[in-house]
Length: 135
Image 1 (cartoon, rainbow, N blue to C red):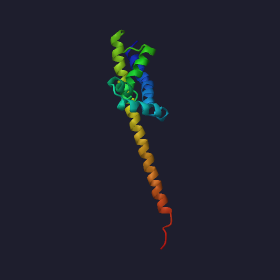
Image 2: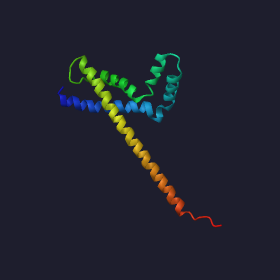
Image 3: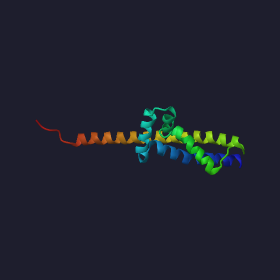
Image 4: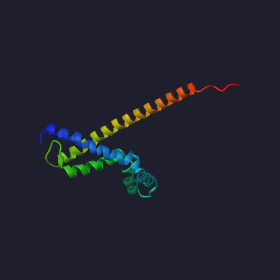
């Protein structure tokens, strides 16, 4: 596969990796299992158990396992056609996916900030429109 094709594959494969990792670690649809994992990662007696459950609460950590799944399914290799290609593509996919998730988080914060500012301004306008009580 040509290098330019490999780069395109890298940026495209990072999208589902980021999507799955973000959804499992942040979205409401997985809230209850995530809360269970948070509890187990903080309160389990054994270190290995705490680390295992932590994987499902951290988008960076979880993206490594999602990446491994996609590497197995797609057989994607970057730069080399042997084990080195899998190693390089794995870390590259994780990195690009985490850049995507960081950008997504910034966009979400910006949108929330915009909504809050709009809500505050609307409330101020309503307060100004209401007649003041007379004594």
